[in-house]
Length: 314
Image 1 (cartoon, helix red, strand yellow):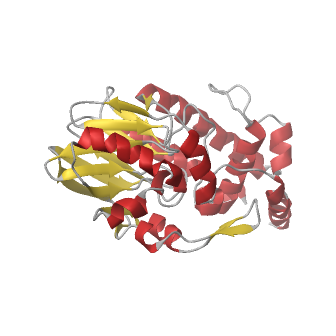
Image 2 (image 1 turned 180 degrees about the vertical axis):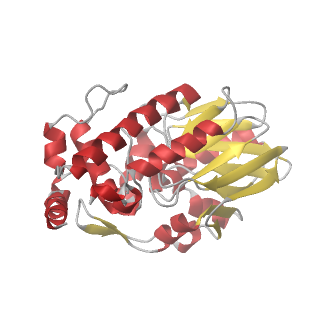
Image 3 (image 1 turned 60 degrees about the vertical axis):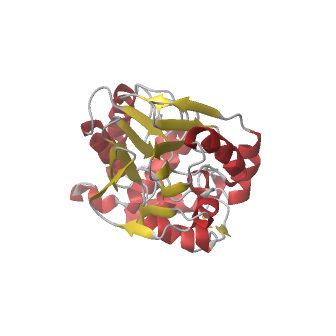
């Protein structure tokens, strides 16, 4: 056990030397989002995917108004409103569902709440938005979001369901693939599944260990995503274009091997640096933009959830 604690301290000491891309302050997203090109793609006659807003936004049009899954970054709200004006034919946004708390997904919350929209999220996401959040790799705090931006209708475990715009919309908890407040939103009739940053086939998986995300949770969540809908289900991730079930499977298969390899390395007393030198990700069926950073994040997340591993690890 003493060796385990010593190794853990070694990992912790390197935290501030590692860069990360999550939990950026609202202003950081705003500048980038304001310059980005926006793309609006009709998925059918009532669903519109808007990309280039910092994070993807899915809009559903119905007699009740507009329902949004996520609201993009702060600097992109006016661009989003412009697209919604054309798509919604003057309809107001009445409901917003946030896939998680990060500013690239929740930047427009306050604007739409002021317009009368109710905002739904996981309880943990709302909690993180309501209080200052510590960013360990910068040794500073991100200020709490404005009160109006914080979701007011929350849930914890299980799944919920609502009817809107001719759709049966199911939303439910995912097991900490990115943060501790991630959810999916499934539009059953349209066979469209929104999962936020729980999948990222076009980018390195971002596991926010300091917000409860962990590699085992990502593997479990992606198995859950794979089991929903059917082979034709169109998946909307946090950024980028539509994702297929095959792409989710490729990511999940790679991460399952990462989990197994890292568990074995931890049992042998490997530090993060040892895993990086051992090229822990070599031979997996995907490429990595920054393998050392991913190993760092995955290892940190495993420590935070080591009780989920075999008891023989300690």
